[in-house]
Each structure stands twice: as C-alpha cells, then as structure tokens.
Amino acid sequence: MPIYEYRCEACGHRFEHLFLPAAKTDPVCPACQSRDLEKLMSQFALSTSELTKARVKAARTQIAQSNDHKDKQIAEAEYTRHHLEDHLPPAETRRRRSG
Ligand SMILES: [Zn+2]
Image 1 (spheres, rainbow, N blue to C red):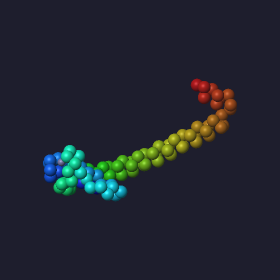
Image 2: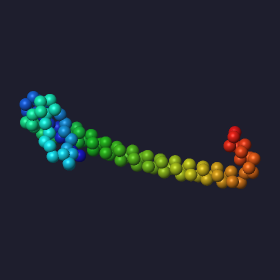
Image 3: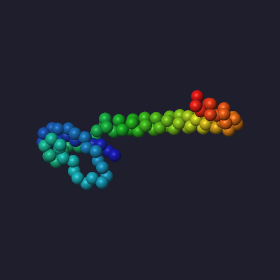
Image 4: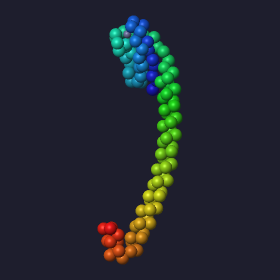
C-alpha cells in the first residue's frame, strides 16, 4: 500500500496519507480540512517499508529454520522419552513422574 506525503497549500501542514484501494475519498488536510494539497513522494516511508519487508522476510526465514530445527529436537526427545517409558516397569515410571 503506497503512503504519500502531502503538504497543505493552505496552511503548510505536512502529513502522510495511506492509500487504501477501497477508499475513493481524496485526502484532506487534517489541520484545516483543505483539499488544496501538494503530493510529495514519501521516500522515507517507501524505503522504510521496503527495508521492513526485507527484514521481516529474513526474520521469518530464520524463525522458520530455527522452529524446524527445534521441532525436530523436541520430536526426537519426546520419542526417546516415550520409548524409554514404554520399556520401563510401571513402578519405575511412577517414581520418575512424581520425582
Ligand atoms: Zn491545511
């Protein structure tokens, strides 16, 4: 979603307006409700959102990889535990669980 920066010609107020595809209304100055606006490209907002996207993607990849790794370790630990308990005598299992 593009974010545009506007400068109000009437009062000089600068603000950012996020364009929603569904919204058909023109932006108005939040300070004086004037529609006499100059559209500026908000480079800061654009580059930030691009950077954020890249960072989020990188973070997600990292999380996905670490989760995958963790899940495998947990699965292996669970399997080992169940496997051991299945083969322990009942008394031994109870003692282990209460302790
Ligand atoms: Zn204004």
